[in-house]
Image (cartoon, rainbow, N blue to C red):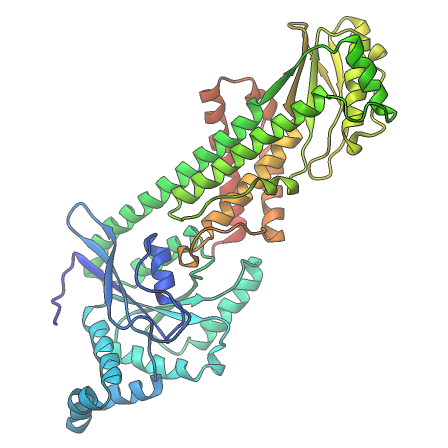
Length: 486
């Protein structure tokens, strides 16, 4: 089958040694399941084409998944010999009947030469160039194909610090520097790539294309970019709604009766252990709401980013240390002291923080309250004071700003995990975040200085909108740290 050049159809051929992960990467780039993935050689036996992007002018960016190179040394030797009659006869006649698999390999390579605009050559980063004998042979095959080549480093393992990945990248750049058809070398792990790295790949493709295809490619790249930007914007919106849910969450508490005060005081000294505790119940209700919201966020991010999976279990909240602010309105000092004591009894983290509220401001007529801290977020633990107005009887249990900051940290880390989860891995699975991710996100959140308490006072739509820009800014700052420009 022959192909005539078409400036509106740009063809990318994904090639590699057998069993390196071409189909897995194709699934990740296409955001859908294609081909067959298995841990054995020669899984892909025929060339298959898939549309990566389609422009309004009818232009198409086509990705070809091709059979892996098997006996690369013999294949390179046979392709070199095709220029003489005997070599051509061996390739076209002898191999066709004597070694059909080898003949199909040659046919696939000729197809790549005839159709490709760019060749994407995938390698296993764990096999250093000088220790993988097939690399030199496959460089000869790529030279025979005669098209621009972008080398993609696969099987890089879990994300690591940028400096470590850059060092490995430089090893491969140095090893392939003598091959002029290799235009660049990029990290592109089929299991742990990020869409930021895909953007780098698409920029590199544009730089390597012949001039007559660049106009159509710019249109196609903008189509692809809009789809990724839409997914990113939807992800930020989902994260903002989750954080707003935490800010707006509250559980009302009635002013305790004399009996309830006696029980909470008794609980502090070890009595009434099984007695109903309204504060603990409110804490549990808030935690359950937050866990449900986090599970919903996970499912939404998985869907937005083209993955599959059942989401995340509530057990992730065992890793999330949280605290509460207790806001008590129009309460006499004795009632406030009883609730404060009850809080101290409810958590070991708050032991010893019981406060005598009778002289903490309420007697000054300012409606001041000293809240009890339950737990701690990122090691922060202290008692907080608030100026409150007497508007209603009872109390409101809410997440503190420190707790919401902790939720924001987990939310950003969740998004990074989803954004780096290659579709070729199968269904989404929960995993721990690398420590350098946590530091990058923590630093970015600290610098953002989001006015959470001010946002808490806004109406729902305004509150979500007020969170969009800060979350976007945090993510962009993190991406700049994880993927610094060259």
